[in-house]
Length: 284
Ligand SMILES: [Zn+2]
Ligand SMILES: [Zn+2]
Image (cartoon, rainbow, N blue to C red):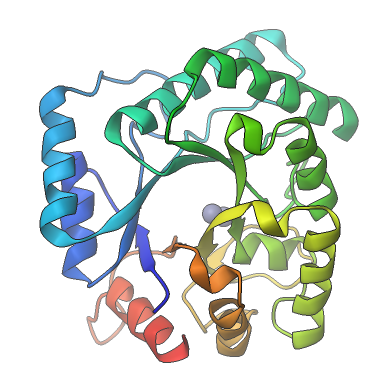
């Protein structure tokens, strides 16, 4: 069985995300360790940690992962934002360590008014410094592929491969593959040929072996649209078969997969988390 779960809310405590995941019979969970739209963060207390660990033990939910703040931009050409992003990413990684998470997912960054090349250099330099300051023992930093919206970097396998080459395993840096982002970026996950082509490229750029987690999302926008809009599983432009290929892929199926689809209910007042989990269990 594939380890499946979703991003869950930490309102009321970190353990609430774990408990919520267990309610939907999820195996794994992703959470924010702080408000993702703010720089500041309250320190994590010992009681936060023990409640969190206790909920993992009690429910059997494993492979907890965090997603870092959307404000962070390690590719920023502006020194002030770049420094602030480095400091913030240090805190994010430390918090993942403190809570005993598998890792923290990060969008590589946007080059804004500079160039892709200089943006990538800035990211690599930043990660090297962050890694030294954090000196992580267990938690990994996972670079997430993006849809390539605007000046977002890390949308193709070549850019991810370049970043991994400058950081990689020795710095506990891996990849989180987002299916919606890959498809929107131009890798056609809706067809067997398109998926094969992605796989070939991911192997060639040494990305495939660095993937440690997946974000399972269908896409509202088409392949190559470079627009990041998540859709419920099977209802988007990737479709059931496309998602099924990912679930059955011999390497990917061994990795934890997290939904980042919209919450709420459908017209029959059934929870979307429950629906998406059911569809995934049918497809795996
Ligand atoms: Zn994602
Ligand atoms: Zn997204």
